Length: 251
Image (cartoon, rainbow, N blue to C red):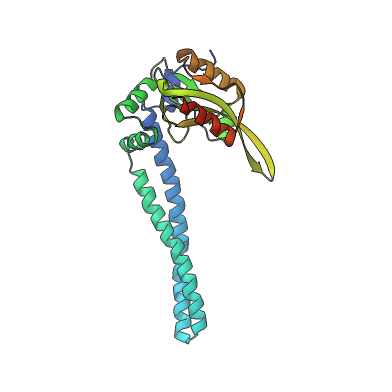
């Protein structure tokens, strides 16, 4: 068996609260804390600069140096603008930190089109021993790509992507490999991802090695043989978009 099934060891390590959404909420809080600390430090530094600029500008005003006062006001405006952005960021981070599992599920409802009951059913099925843990890349490669393991349950699929694009397996119409690229120091780097498309037009993807991607396709289509498998490696852009349009036109 290429993919391991959900087990107590994996659950205790990755889902100690027995819930995918509880873990996503914990990660959200950690990210909010990191961002909050950075913004507070930056705001403190900008606040110190503001105090210094105010004192300097006031000194120029007392000396009657109008040109320096104008420059001081411009600098105060620029520093004040960034200080205000930091304050707004702090407010946003605090609000984001206060979000609970309910808000995470509400956000997932919007991005997936699934109901609250369906998402809670996915969460329940995800922790069952019959669910599969989907590792699309090696641990090191997944860490570099900041990619989580996905989960395939009896009725639902989540590729582990940050958009939380959870799908009902019966709604999936096609799956393919596609290649995309980015540049590092003017050098073009090619990557390969697995993409899953449902009848609602939502496409979820995850970087995957050829071996793991093929194993996933075999596992998925064994339970849902109606899913169309694209045998050709598609390229990002028009070719991939045409594949999506073609499948959706047949739904």
